[in-house]
Image (cartoon, rainbow, N blue to C red; front, side, top):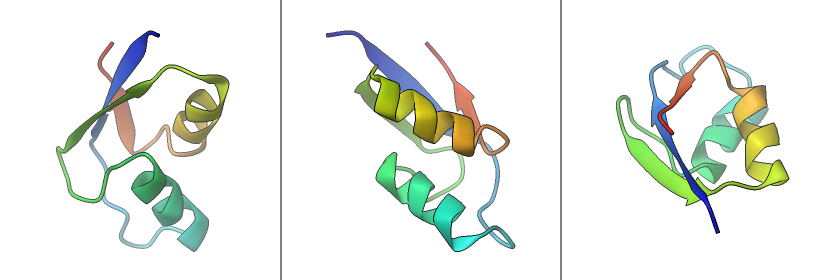
Length: 58
């Protein structure tokens, strides 16, 4: 299955608990960390929720 790389570009400081939990669910917890996940509708929805703090790399 296709994969997608996600890089955290924004800090979770002063964000809501659900946005922090979404970052952890994506495998991101530190700035500039890259996570590679399967490209699925669930992952796309999580990315959309925190799109202001992440960058999709491909």
